[in-house]
Image 1: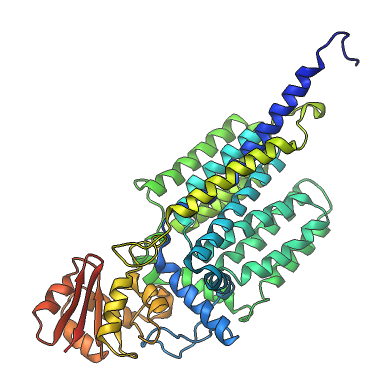
Image 2: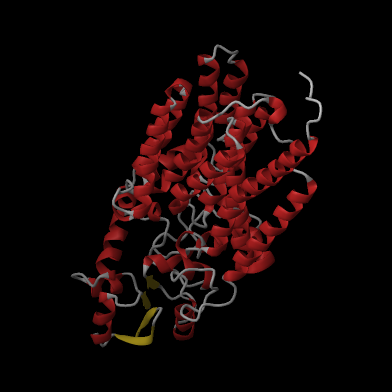
Length: 483
């Protein structure tokens, strides 16, 4: 069909330029906004600081940390340190640039993960705006599980695996390679074989040859044994997920409550997906339903797993919202000018977010990038009052920071909940709230110092006990030492 005589070709050119700008802006928003949010948020030391310290030990000795180096209750006993790869990455960044390097690594992981999620939505067939909106909504739903810790580094591995499997070409053979990295980063590596199995299901349902997908599934499962611990990492994950202490005491291992902020977003997102599926039911495929059921079930079982639902649902829904567009009308790759302008604005936003938390926190004495569970002022007081080697009863959320910042002072328990037997947790739980027999527990474990948060019940008891003296009482907490 020819172009009508007298038609103004400038209209098409202007529309194309607008498309370039729109494409660049939405694509940037999908990755930059989650990254900026990560840079602005405060990092919790509870699940991060001890990883940095373990990574430092590995870099310093050239050997993987395989026994507990932090506590007196498990000192020298085996530790299946499955997340050693993430520890080395965080510790390397810390060596180069301190905690600024750690937050930059964290922000890069989140930005890359959601940029890839955007690409997955686009590959499913949605337009640029829909893909970006779905990506940002996914970030909001999963934000509560996206703290600075090894799990954050698994986000780009999830979305990259999804993208490689969707290609159905030579690049798909990289999935087992990604699975090797994932296995040494975080326990969520079990998702890689699950994603590969869904791809095999797509081939079977669509009556395509399943040979390539079947081989990828087998290779991906085999890849999960490519770690220092072999297939024992699978039994480790079973032990962690079924540990009663974890289930009963760690909030993120409990099902998301619809009455909480994070939980309500999860449940509302599930309802929204069902509504879209009903309105677009002619485009819904059996494997779409299977994927959504599996990842929604993961999120419904534990708040920390809602992130996997948040990464899986957007590209599935994007496929339902596809609106066919004539090939000639689709915008080409972004023009240089709009891309450069978008890149400049993105860099400015990321730089501002990065600098927002620079400096030290006057309350804790730690970098502003860290939350209140990094009480450096209490570390300093403990170091002044007690010699190296002194055993400490540290409020468990503070223990990770003490392990990082006060080497040589073993603590009673820390964030590795599964590492400690039930009797140790009973002693800790009783002592930390000044329960019956708390003095005997401190004596039996030869505790030389007690570090508590503000308003702790045990602090009142220690203040009245002549066997203990107050070293410091600070807005960040208090330190008591044995006389």
